[in-house]
Image (cartoon, rainbow, N blue to C red; front, side):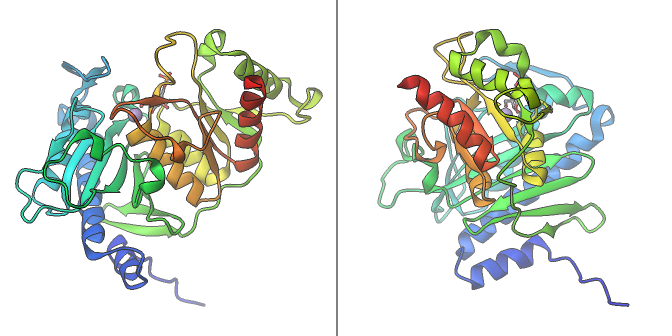
Length: 339
Ligand code: F6P
Ligand code: MN
């Protein structure tokens, strides 16, 4: 009988990545700090009602959304963990109007961290999976004072991105630009252990994820695409599709990374000023990087998400991501409609 191989801890994985020249020691330690903060968030989330952390915080964020106690707590955990890390010049978060400089960092770090501290927060109070999404950019060299414009870099500039999903188990999915890898939190050891190296998203799928309740607000190409999915075997697509919608982006994307699928949050006519629901800098960009590194694709219906030049920190964007061939079909329908 062969002895089972010992799983590799995140720490060793990162040291090996450093030895291979994929990351430098600063980025390695920054990822370690973020992973440690995510363990603390996982701990708080798992306490549920016993931790007194459920329910509304009684405040709102810049996007006019009511903040939950866990949104605020997760944001604080990430900020505090990074405050003394020394690897960051600044942080931006879904839960903060403006970016925050790192007050205690000396010498000042070279990286910018952007995050959605608790994604899917409408699911917190009903005990359904939620998560944390993060993106790491390099701080431009030679700047005197950190400004919002320094964060506004296209997703292609990301040096690392990841998410954790707080589900039946807590998982961390990470890319440093050399594939996408999955780690599972061993709660007894308190470490993330590598459970899948090089995730690959199947190019074809029969599963889509969308909030169908918005259908009446969609634009014509989206109406056409969805009606063809729903028409199944007897329709133009010639196959039956299944639908899943957790309403936590982390959980829906995690399913797609595991078994394929397409995740869609289109622009719609409910609020024409909003070009989609999801935020570019700390939701769409990191997820697109992760998905592309796993062989999938991500567009806004017109172009690759990672190539969009951001204009605002909290900018919204339409999202089509997942199995490559399916994202291509949905994008083609949108491009054809533009003529
Ligand atoms: O962060 C935004 C978010 O909560 C995502 O996690 C999720 O995919 C989406 O919004 C859910 O949207 P809706 O409430 O329309 O289903
Ligand atoms: Mn979110």
